[in-house]
Length: 102
Image (cartoon, rainbow, N blue to C red; front, side, top):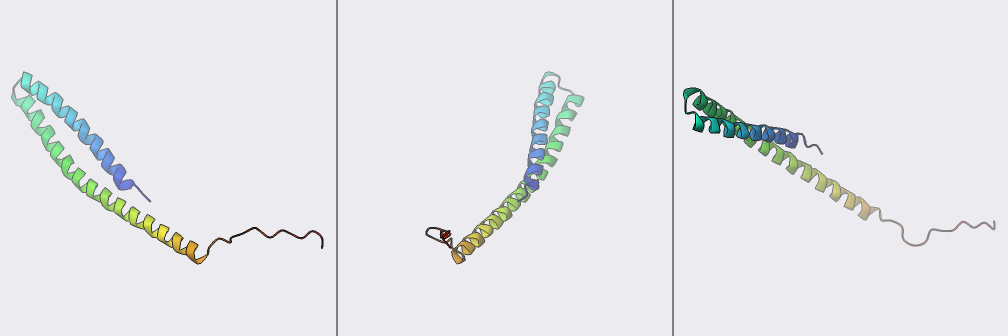
């Protein structure tokens, strides 16, 4: 069971949150100093966030599909294990003792 897709999604999400914090900071600068440079930094950061959002959408779907496949595999192994146990039950009762008198 691999979780590579989920790890990729988590890394992208962390990057997205960093961009959200940067956007907040750029927004504060823009509000205090309305100008071309401060507005450009806000717009640039928003474009980067849009790209990351699209990547996050793809990564979340990939992580979901990977999780679904992992779940199917796990349930299949459980079914096989149950079938094996049913076909080969454990022996009941006491274990036979060794006769030391012989």
